Amino acid sequence: MNGGADLGGMHGFGPVIEEENEPHFHSDWESRAMGVVIALGACGQWNIDQSRYSRESLPPADYMRFPYYKIWTLAVSKLLLSRGMVSEEELQSGKMTSPAITVKGRLGAAQVWDGIHSLSGRADREVTSQPAFAVGDAIRTVNKHPTGHTRLPGYARAKDGIITKVLGFHVYPDSSGNDLGDDPQWLYQVRFSARELWGEDKNPHDSVTLDLWEPHFA
Image 1 (cartoon, rainbow, N blue to C red):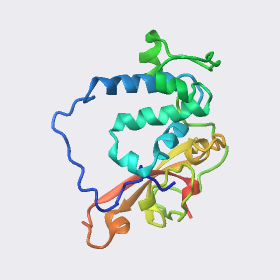
Image 2: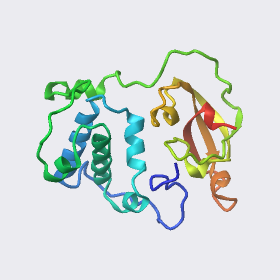
Image 3: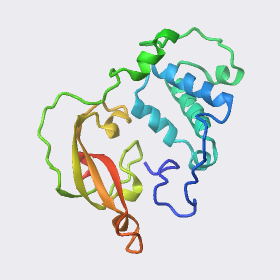
Image 4: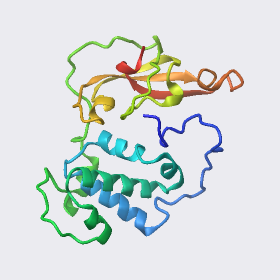
């Protein structure tokens, strides 16, 4: 979709300023927010693509002005409500008033390290087809603007690129994130020149590399 998360190449936002010696978290609540989101993800009520879609579908003005972890907490609140895990009243009061629903899993303290570093969340799937493209092939991306989740950025639509790696057969986020199942597709690394993305006045030596799926190609 075209929303606040799709900022690449947009004018008016200025350069990305690197914070020297930046801490992992700027406030205590941020580390708690991350812990809550990871623990809730282990419940198995949504997948990573649905989680991303919940964040990127926030109102653009909110997405662009709120801190990173506030976006996380707002998005996970949407997911909790949509799955019937909490009510709006419970979110507002911070108190449980309805019986808990049955979830698929939980993340106990002893499982945190292994859970985060395990391969159980891998997105590769058994290969059922052959890739249509190879390293060195020229491709052109589609010019589509879906209302749901997509991993094809707005600035890279209808652009010419070169395949630099074939990354395997993976879950297709544009399907998975929209509650349409895994629908695995071939995944590629694609290089785009800065001039192709943003105009002839850009440095001819600069480029951007994106991981894109076969349906993203025209």
